[in-house]
Amino acid sequence: MSADDQAFLDVLSSLPTEIQRYSQEVTDYIERNTNGVGDYIDQNVEKIARSLRDLLADSSWVPESIRPRPPSPPPPIVAIPTSALQSMQNWIARHKVLTGFIVVATGTAIYKTYQNQAKLRKSRRAKRSRSGGRTEVVVVAGSPVLHLTRSLALDLERKGFIVFVISNSPEDDVLINNLSRPDIRPLAIDTSNPPSAGASIERFAHYLQTPHAAVPGAKRHHLSLRAVLLVPSINYLSSPIATIPPSTFADLFNTHLLNPILTVQSFLPLLTASLSPNGESPPKVLILTPSIISSINPPFHAPEATVCAALSAFTDVLTAELRPLAIPVTHIQLGTFDFLGTSARHHLQQQAPSGSVGLLCATEGADPASWPDSARHVYARNFDSQAGSAISTRRIRGMRGSQLRDLHNAVFDVTDGSITSGTIRVGRGAGLYGFVGSWVPRSLVAWMMGIRKVGELKAWQYNTPRSAGSVDEEEESEQEKDTSQDSFIAVDIEQHVADSHIWRSVNEQSEAGINQFI
Image 1 (spheres, rainbow, N blue to C red):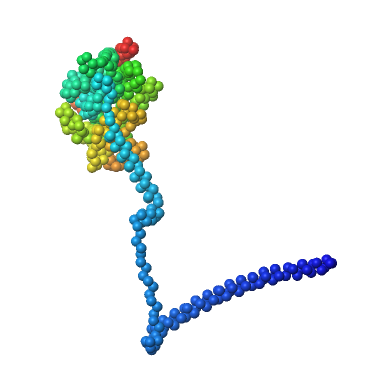
Image 2 (cartoon, rainbow, N blue to C red; image 1 turned 30 degrees about the horizontal axis):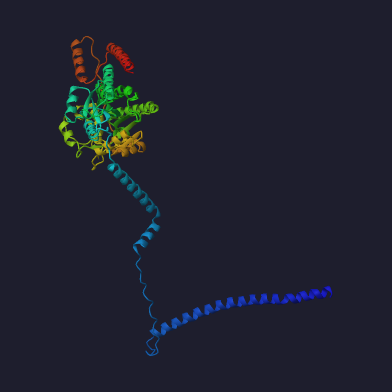
């Protein structure tokens, strides 16, 4: 067979496949067009029939027997009620962001509630010896006149501690003994006299190292110092800086700042000595300070803001120095507390020297009527505005202070080691005002307190020159000067130099006493 014959046969063999392919494509095209045309015809015929039916049904000339009846109305759509679960799922699907916020807030609230309930259920009792005697000692360094000092002493004694309250005078001994608790005892320490304070600390250390017995004939045990609580004074003067005499600042720094620092300094040799039994943690230092005013530093509160800031800085330095010695220092920043309704209410009311038992951290407000005319013109209106604000009264309007139980529990948890944080906030308003002081602008805080710009200042008034020969006028002016400045201190340079020598001798005596004790 030749090549031409083979090529012809190949062409013939491929013809059926090509014919089948072309026929299939033609069939598909016809079906597509036919279906489209058929659908179009069906739709139009149905539309024409519906229109004709409606026309005949509405025509009155068509007999009733052959009149087409209108189509039956479609069945009503009945809404099937969804379940509560389906409704909730639909709402969650529409509000995803709000749902996430609600879940986070609810979880946080539940966790905080559970945590608070667990803290309340916790058993807080000091350790005792096998014979049932008290073995743990706590020193409260605070004035017995303060309600806070007496409240902490009563609560710590109730939980099984032997409490020593620092006494600076016989009147303080009377207040401490009037608490009528055998395990709340005065500890006389004169911080203004370093040698005397060192001798008192030495006697106290000897008392701790002496074996004690719960009852006569029982097995003796040693006492251990667990904590030293520093409770500075919380009453401060509220007044413009221009109207505060220098003597007031001197007394304030001496009683509210220098005295707490000297108290801690007196106890440092005892804290750094190894007096605790083997296996027990070293004593802890707790420093309590008001935090609301010092967080925002509002106007007319310079004494409290200055003292609290200085105590905070002193606490930071003390923490850094005692950290290598494994002696923890905790700064407890106080908010607002309510003494009413506490377990020690009757003791506080009986021992209160004056006034009622109420909110903690009350200030002593100055009377603008006693200010000079110039100061009253400049500061009086803003002072009265801030005196009635919620920030000045240290509380949120319409809300009472926190219960003292919160502070008692926090002090015990720090003492037994449950809380190891260096700084904690306790009391209503402590955390809120801390946030405000850190993030809210000072100008906005002042505006919220009612501080407004003074429109007009008084002109400067000065004395006219006097003649040199008028002795009577000079004596009269000197008398007026003395009467007008009787609230201020005039510092004599020679006396100041002499005092500096006295202070130097006191420092040398204190160093000698501490070296002898060590």
